[in-house]
Length: 297
Ligand SMILES: NC(=O)c1ccc[n+]([C@@H]2O[C@H](COP(=O)([O-])OP(=O)(O)OC[C@H]3O[C@@H](n4cnc5c(N)ncnc54)[C@H](OP(=O)(O)O)[C@@H]3O)[C@@H](O)[C@H]2O)c1
Image 1 (cartoon, rainbow, N blue to C red):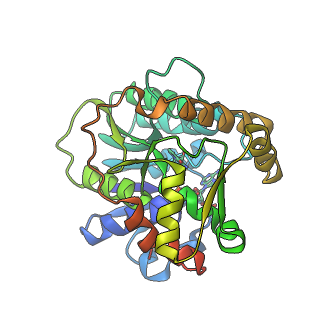
Image 2: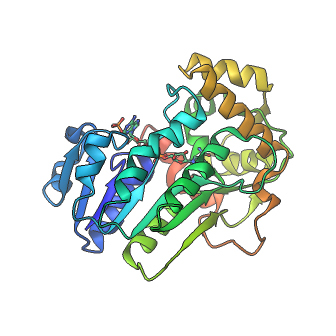
């Protein structure tokens, strides 16, 4: 049986769907089971509670062979370390006495970067902590998610603009959440792999934010521009959205590291095996997000 965490999140929903289509027996752990689709609820085992809670995750691992592990990184956490490493400690402890042989975790690029990189550094520390338990572990080391652009549906719709504290000419890799979920499903279904490894997920191409704006313009049929904002303004924006000072620091450090080249520093350039292009993602998901829809279902 496979345990899926965050089964109602953007990535977790797709992982759950992919595993169910493959006929895998599934258990999910989530805080509010009423958020599950009723047709899905009838096909799976449900454990209620947070996967960070020792009294929840321990029993949830009973009889489980493999786990999809996603630390949600809530903006209200005290720090990046709290959001990723501390969040995963009870899971790490429970793994040691469990039947689990394989774990696939959602993580970030940045292994080997010499500077603090906030959420990326903490995600990698989480990977090391889980990997040290002796389970077979694959860390899905994600580039920036294309889907971040959809979070700016409102300014795109209202003002024809999206923002980031990064130069418009900076080329970065971007991967679609759908591809992250598909890779997780493949790894969870075929568990012939062993040991501990990072799986860099880079998308098929590197794009600048200006190039992304041109693609969005083309797909939605009206001008959309990218605007670089100051890191201090970005930090204020995150505070305004309820992020703690520790999490603001984590976002700022991570985006600073990305601006300085972290995402491409240590990844072999041939690791281009997540297929969705930004243009395809815009057609499949951004158009739906701009019209208030949900492309996950
Ligand atoms: N954004 C990027 O560019 C980027 C880059 C690299 C890696 N990542 C990683 O990508 C992942 C994002 O996943 P996603 O998009 O699927 O997230 P999402 O859509 O925001 O889903 C998060 C899920 O976590 C649950 N959740 C939130 N707080 C929780 C808590 N304290 N305890 C238990 N469950 C909780 C939520 O469910 P309920 O609220 O309904 O309980 C929700 O289903 C994160 O791990 C992030 O670090 C992001």
